[in-house]
Image (cartoon, rainbow, N blue to C red; front, side, top):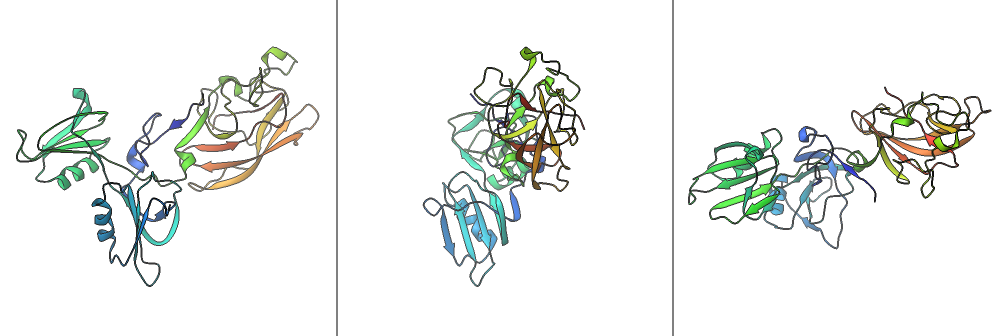
Length: 316
């Protein structure tokens, strides 16, 4: 079963399964939107302002997010009712997400409560959560309850219980980057490091291959897809040849060219696989895509073109 690592808490509604923080997320964004599905979503013509578009979404219990645009003669408001996917640029547009309503009051451990404060209405409670680090959810008690206009902030709200006079919700965030920076598999085998000789001396039992469905498939290889390198061995693919018979394989894989430097830039590149006689040139090669995810790289990697061949890693 594939292991998918999801990072950045609740960005686009994704749970936190790897180290991350919502500090790079936001609830509104300029110049970006999501894919529109005419079978589920709704387009409203003639909505004069982005605030009205936001309110229209808030009044729709199924609305996950909205985009307002003034690119043409008529202002348009898009209401998204499906999971927000396909994050991409748009012209003269503003987008936002709204809190996801929860049934009942948040319950959990004492440490789950981040803060408690007065709030005259639910809007004040939501803003209190947005301004508090690591706040995932909130429960606001109105003036009919025993807590009387009080807002509880939570780092975790996995469970709720029925309540009178309370309103709860979970904050959604927009992650300003491509989906692969949030959802990826991991290369974490320590023997991928470039200074590991592996099977260079034809010790076949120590040879590994990045090709699915073989008895010698690398332990961390799950087939073609997006990968981040998270390992004691390294953090990225090397930009020069480590030589033949390195990284626990015969044909050592390295990146031909420099990683993309701009944030969220995607670059089509080539991985070369070094054999005993190619002297730094490509004996085999693979076409890949590299994405700069603001502090780390994610690679769209295919199966290695031959065995034994493997992607090497290096610290940077």
